[in-house]
Image (cartoon, rainbow, N blue to C red; front, side, top):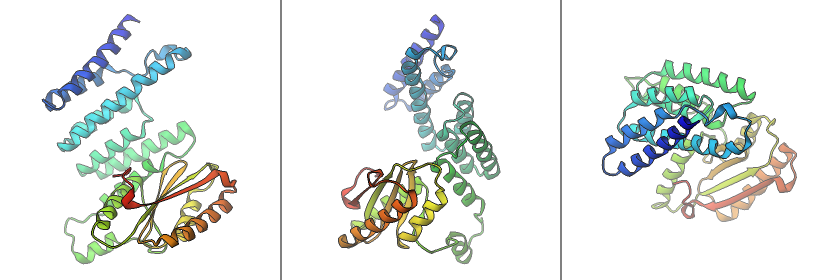
Length: 290
């Protein structure tokens, strides 16, 4: 046990040292972060997994490990060191195989290096692993990685206007557009920039639904797509919240949209009124997603 305590103390000490070096000597900070990550071997005192008093401590060091890992990944991304990211993530997956963001960062690095087949293979393997372990679909954020892989696969090195139009255009232009969370953030900030110069008022809406997880996500997507306009965008932000972005919406039209979506959601989910909440705000007033 003494060795475990010494390792954990050293683990935390090295991370603090790396944080202090981040502004002065980033290369030294990277080396220290890597050194710290190699000390972490998994859940603290996992052999005593039934000791309830250990749970907060174990969770603390797990969070610290993941926070440090993602901090190092971000640094490597800035320098386009994708091969190092792949190695780092592959090592991390041996310790935290069910942490979705590690898999996503690994896939992103593979795509940046043009390794689409490897990225697809890893996506399929990790998807099967998580479905088998949890007997449920991973988050929409993780599933969105497949669209990213597919978009890389169809790119043509000799593109022209005609081929670009074919590749870029959606298969269907009916109803609102659904995208993953990262794409939503990009579109949100793009629209926010446009709002600075155009006389248009866009709204963002958060729908919080205390719903039955057995509901068909495809059905929810179709419901939103059919009840919003072509210029609107939505994403499943997490398991219980959906984000909408309503383009060039008059204030008087917000209530119309709210009532329409509320009624249809209530009918679809069979929930009580208290289980569905919708909050609208003009984009220029919102700074949380920037």
